[in-house]
Amino acid sequence: MVVGIAHHPPNERQIDLMNEQRCGAQGKSEEYMTDPESTAIDSVAAMATDHTEAPAHPLHKVLSFVRRSGRLDDRLQRAWDNYAGTYLLDIAAGNLLDVREGVTLDRALVESAWGNDNPLIVEIGTGQGENVVAAAAAHPETNFLALEVYDPGVAHTLLLAGKQGLTNIRVAQVNAPELFKVTAPGTAAEVWTFFPDPWPKKKHHKRRIVQEAMAGDIHCALAADGVWRIATDIEDYALHVHEVMDGLDGWKNLGSVTVSLPLEHVGKGNADLAADMPHADFTESERFEGRVLTNFEKKGLAAGRVIHDFTYQAVTSD
Image (cartoon, rainbow, N blue to C red):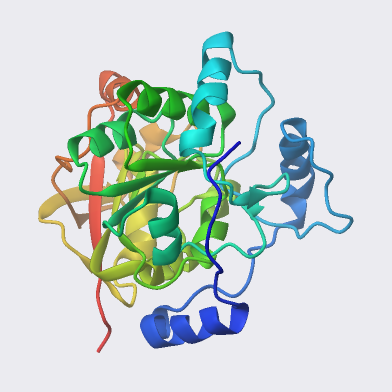
């Protein structure tokens, strides 16, 4: 039993009209990123953890994740059984965690699933749920949506939220780029992406969640002057964020911290080479005070990695 959707979403034409009115040049992405070489690993890995039949002719997509098989331990299974009915949104379908047909993330869904019209913050890739649950506990006046694809992460988030009896958080096990494609304009106050999978190999950079198409969809989903907060402890990923976001139409970098980064990507296992490469100055943000120090971030700091924070505000182009 999971939280259902009690409204009638707009049809495809209505969504297009809303996007045209709100998004303009930053409109929704219309094409899937395709990568025939990635099909086998994506499909097999996804089917390993999902018993839904694969479509006869699946659309080849570049995913920012690969689902891995693995059973929940007894504690996490109990958490799933006890709390999924309270927190888990029934919006995903298929072994690639696409959005179920007919679902639109909009203010009507927020009112239905959360029972109020409070501002919504969406965190992409919540991991074990430490940050999003802490934020929800600290800000009961705000609604939070945790997006996570991995079963243990979903279950642990359910456990943390359930133990505190939180009422302002929901969880969705769904492919985030697909959800933002069907998110109505102005639905979210903020979007958070903290420590996304770095996909260090150069040939896998297309799998990184921060992409121009994704930025367009998030821009559309944000309310006026909403922000996309990003953090990474991988220097190469920080360069990638700047390459995608700096100067991108419709976004303003709100940072005030100057950092020096190499101007080339080094690829997996070659981080030491970056020190000898030409560098340039970039602008980033102070550490976001609303992000708790998770175990994941602690490990990065212990390994000597520098945390890069970004704050990009959605603005209306001239």
